[in-house]
Image (tube, rainbow, N blue to C red; front, top):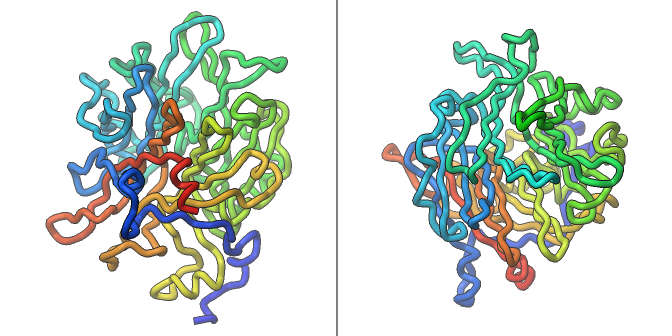
Length: 419
């Protein structure tokens, strides 16, 4: 078995994490009643054989709106709404835009807050990659806006499409969206990120003129480190602002799709104009499609798809000996911005729920990797509601596992006790 390992897979940051792992996929006997909720899953949608890639936004009335495609990445957008803080999802947007039926990418949704007193807007964005399925991509990205807390939405509007002479086959637009500062104060501008099939990463700046959105022409922002960007297949980045989202530094967390590197960390002190030379993230944070949120106590809760590259763990946990990495599934990392800044491992990890591989009948540390792309919201009081897609134990008629969308509620004051 040792011969299957090419040493290049175990360079570039590979190794095991040493911080504790809290497992919420198996409920221990004698679990106190008040802690049992940690092991429960709320089904958002399981109506078809495959639903995936959700994102969520907290509405002003404390409802949670979750959006997701009807298949892997592409497919008509679907919505569900929770009126009870993520316990159940029994409602949906009425009269969704017709153009949403033709979505070609995973949706992302964000709240836009304005400094001039303009009421908040919700922004939904979908890219237009080339799936090589016989449908010619329009390129660019589509966006919809809501001015009434998600009750109604505008039809998709295409930006930087091929019809305008651009060739951006955007993937996961916007993987992150960051409100910008000028002269130390927040302004009504937002920096959005996406990547293209050649793993060039772009940014565009969103602003508003006379109430209408304006996006700057996308430009590569990591060109100074193109060799690293290309070798790691850098993509689907998350951006975290220092000082609980109020500071003057940005931290970029990448997905290294080549699996030859750990995730990368890079920092900017000039609002994303330039970035520091990337460094390898600790293995505790290695994964794909990170989504980060601050908690009231100042800690970060970052969800992602686990990618494990440690050689000894792989020998132990890879059942067929054919892979150079494996996944522990749906993971959350708990730590601080200082941990990110200083390359520390963080406080602990959480295995939120088990995503079953086809041969499994019960939870294990080895898990399905078709998971992540989480929609996270933080409720008043600090309860996190995190959602994802995956195979959680429900089967189709033919016996295969169904892929569907679920959520879980977590209070770190409770997971702290499980350490």
